[in-house]
Length: 206
Image 1 (cartoon, one colour):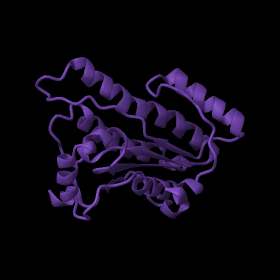
Image 2: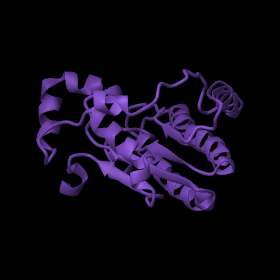
Image 3: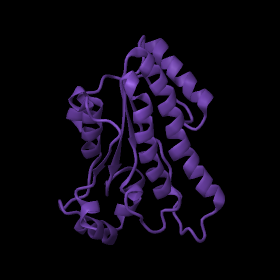
């Protein structure tokens, strides 16, 4: 993780609700004011999940998940893409999930929201490509961090999920960060509109 972090310049801490356009615009304005430049790389990693069966999922949980995961990604991506396009280009990477590639039980609206983010990313890619803006998404698999961390505190769950990964281990934040950084770099200058699955081979083995 250290080598990945060292490749990213020191950032300017900002706070905004991603599903509030006014707050997002204000955050980008502040960044540009303090940095003296338009952001040339944006990663949409904000997300929530409300676990439960669809049969019993409250509609409010469904709406809230879509509002943050999908609408939030749309707002941040659009604000960023317009500004990047005016400045000559940039890269946006949106985090989806293996749950947006293959369904999983009791994930509520999470899988649907992440599948939608993948398609949104492709749509943004074709609409903003002419202005030099690349938009891709990354679909993490079984990652031992973040919202999934509590799941892996159960030894049985940890063992079962590890056994399901062809590479034989759970993923790490550094595994995902390295791919995000590559997509945002000049090395991926001809890559756009893709949803890159980073799951140790899980989706391919189902």
